[in-house]
Length: 321
Ligand code: TUI
Image 1 (cartoon, rainbow, N blue to C red):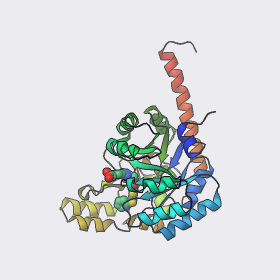
Image 2: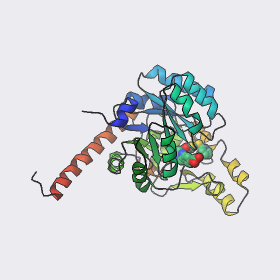
Image 3: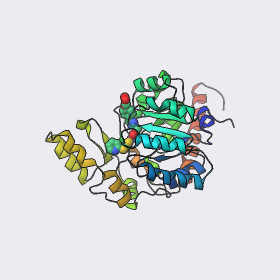
């Protein structure tokens, strides 16, 4: 069967990218996803280049398949990570929380494929002009740092506005979400939250269990007042930040409250005062299972749905079966 445009661009088998989640998407998870035919992505987050170099080495030792690194542009180490990615011949970069425009030339010179995450149509258009290879359009259902438009309406608008392939992210955890995203015009999906519960994911067991047990109304958004909204699972940290926000505490005080909290949750298992970032799709995640099983299940379910929809459309048009 012919691969779609995005699979050809990235040289992967299935159009499924694993979200580059800071402190959660380490080399072990990225390697497992890439080895299964999707695209594994290491999340650099706020980590130093030394730490991320170790994660890149892990992936390069575990698989020959393509993989990526997500560069969080708000990080103080962003430029060090960019240099690292260039030095280590990482084939694909995704970026988050900013505009990667000024680094495009350096990436292009080395043949690195650049795929920014955007949360708006305007930025998607601007980045297409700057030569990005594809765009991840991320709806506000996502975990972590988010924009304010929902996936259902963001994807068709971005698809209409650009010619490069669009990857849908935000709220997608299974084949139903994938089929919906493809119906909206996306050529691939990025899945984050469900991969937190991959067996190979090195996030603390407490974090994984909190995601697996969560229900529809368990995620909340903090930091709207600081201009950096972040979706997390509700806990004591949320209640303290919420109190500061309602008291109109200074922005610096609210931001200080969040420093180091994601690492505490993901690495030390502090799910009480840690920042347990997760998307709304956490409610759809039920168990901890191998990353390869997740990739195969999502693909199989999406294909089954699309086959059934094809039947429905034929019967709507009055065609004989
Ligand atoms: O980046 C993410 N998700 C993240 S980053 C992160 S680490 C963090 N820790 C503490 C505070 C804040 C972040 C956790 N989750 N997703 C990709 C994403 N990018 N979502 C939204 C955006 C985005 C938002 C605004 C991209 C560009 C942008 O505007 C840039 C511009 O210049 O217009």
